[in-house]
Length: 248
Image (cartoon, rainbow, N blue to C red; front, side):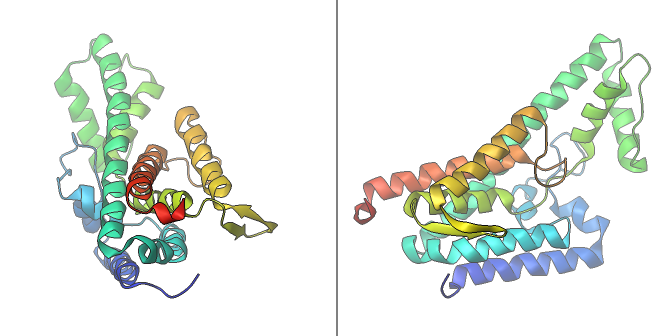
């Protein structure tokens, strides 16, 4: 889709460097740079940014960077470097914020169930800290396994990936070029950007609400995808309406 722009190139290189470096640093890189649940002792405020450059696997970084390459350069050429960077990082931050909000709701629900079962706060967090050290569930007497699993998964599972920022780019692209025909593998007919990207967004909403993963692993941060897409859409819609009327 045309030449790669300078900002997209830098983002691609930075993500690849982080990924390769994390393979050498292993658990230490995850501990320091992934985004942990704020109650977890591994949490650091810088992680709301650094997690955007961390990826869990080759396939994870490949699909994110492929989307950035395919759509990011066109978007940057359309809105300029500064606006592109603002949209990219604001989408990524919004993704992190929404994901943390919903994980807090999950955590507090499970935590309150433990308290209602007569378990004191110190016992709960001692169990969670053992789960971090052993990477195993520490079941609590009087509390259902499902509740302990929900509590533990939120506490010990870090968030990684540029997906939230990428969803912001995709949503913005669909706002600027809603009727641009796009092709995807195995479907030999063009689909307008607004339908293809909009449909993908709705699939993520369904997965976030129901907990059913239609694409990708079950621990995908769907609320992060939604947060990034919403900010990307709102930001681009505002810019298009107020400053880029030539597209109307």
